[in-house]
Length: 251
Image (cartoon, rainbow, N blue to C red):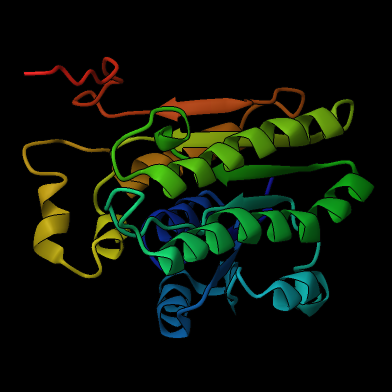
């Protein structure tokens, strides 16, 4: 069955990989992101099955207008992949930038909420659909410097579970994907303000997950029987695991 899938943050990383995977499987993808040139390039690569749509998820008015702004024939969105998100900085909380905190909340929390609220009514009215939210293992496992990023992803996870509580008995599914260490995207470069050397150090000596691995997980949950809902899926590479609690010993 061919689906119409809307993916946010589709100009690079997870979003672009998800778009490529789903188009390759015969679905149609509405690729949303801020970078129009990147979207155009993706459209040139994937052809008519991909609809590039310039959108900033932090623009509440644009998001609210989205369902009617889509071209005829693309408005019945079967799947929303809330992928747009970012981490900024790794300083401890008392040194962190408030502007960075606000940007993370605006994108990771408010943007995801507004996208969901814009498209969920149509899914409920049609009694079919799937919301896939990209959270993080940071939602559950804290680490130094993770403060607002981790808290924003904890919101994503809990929001996903509460959506399912609202939707129980309907055919609309909600899945929360929680990746751990993933390379091959702009995530760490953005976090460190464009410092490519520092970003590369995050993955030194590891074999991390890739954006294509996350796309495979999205594909798998979408392809399950319609009566089956995957609530949460935690993904880590074999080089990563949750660790013991931190203990500061007096010397």
